[in-house]
Length: 137
Image (tube, rainbow, N blue to C red; front, side, top):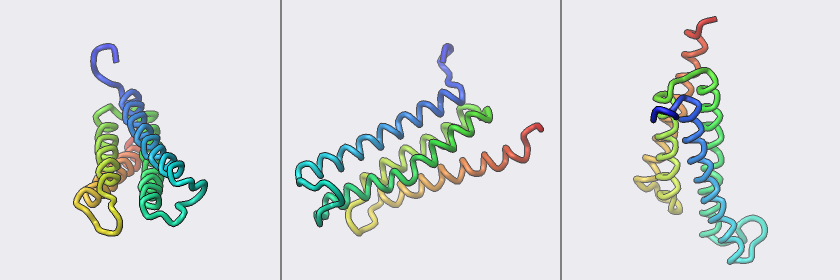
């Protein structure tokens, strides 16, 4: 980023790094809750710990797929704007979903979070499939 603009690979690195930091934060929340409740494995029947574990687990299910897609797109030469179209909604979606996951009820943040996550993964999938058909061979 010498001239102030990011390459596709740099954009993928940015979003991947931010998403991985989110995973670390969510993981630390689980570890700290387990420590304070003296629970080594599982949730020990504690609803708050179960929720924190589920928030982390949900992020861990979606983030690696998005990071992998961005890495492949960057490898294929996708411009930064395309990577941003995947990374920005994925990060925002995962933050909203984590903030909105409150027990059984579907909060607005949770709903928008999963919709943004799905949008991000759909866009990545579409870009990958289109690239497979239009890339010079």
